[in-house]
Image (cartoon, rainbow, N blue to C red; front, side, top):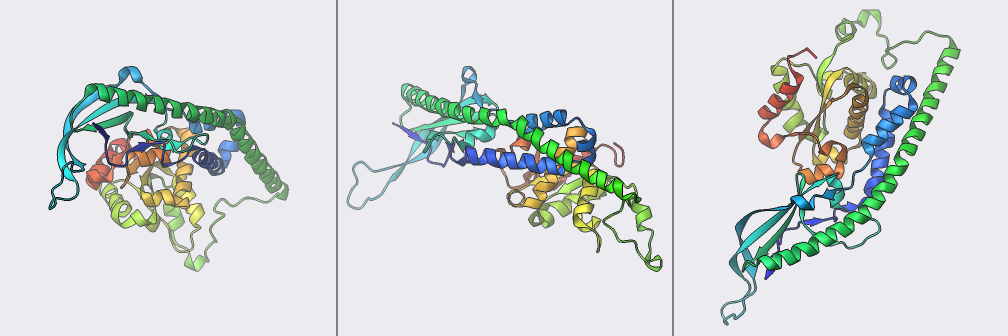
Length: 368
């Protein structure tokens, strides 16, 4: 008879959809806080809010049932109980079976396929997301096409039922998103405008290097002269746990190709304002390499930097170059859905390959 693949491959079980949508709304708030003040003050608040709402909107996955197909059957080992054990033979036995895989392409946000709708509980949908496809696997000792079709119809019916609940929840989220985004942008605009008015009322000249104390003439160096107006080819956004294994060697590889790399340990000096220097690095870098890893997803600071890069993209187009480190597509889709659909390079391909792929985008060193 048909047996479900014993590996832990289930849809809609990773996290509650309502919690994920609430976290996504918090990301919207953080993104508005990270947007450049000039963009808020000089831009049309309605257009800025609409762009943010479009970026954070969630598209419920829609299986393309008319395009479903099967992959070639593969032999697998199956552990089954003994039917007639002898006294000296106990426990299960391994037999050869066959695995049949049905692939169903889908459109929409893959992350939703890992999340359980708030209106449902204990959903049991066997399947796995592989790229832009849902894979349903059926393992059998004795191949039986009719039995597979019966099981497939039942699974597709359950997936359709759960996605209908997900769609209702996502549509409610999307309908309030532009209102929320507009409110956040208007509030920040009001705060910034009040700040500008208060500054102008003081009537004093504004020093641009506000985060740095003027050095004594006897201790002055030409460092400010050297760095004034300096542009970086790439900013490396990473968690500290990934510095030794990925960020630092990747920076060296890119520098060996002639690129100017912003990495915190070599771009910060004693006495610098960390927040100011990172903001400066983000603003003066042509691209941002984002090393997505389990450690990155658990940290607040790297994700603030990512929000700053997202804010840049609202004005400047493509800025973020994603690198996946010890993560798979499902994990990225569930935790950082706004970046999951982008073409990425994996560190498992080797850092030389990562550096080459980044260099293909950067072009000639020092040139836009």
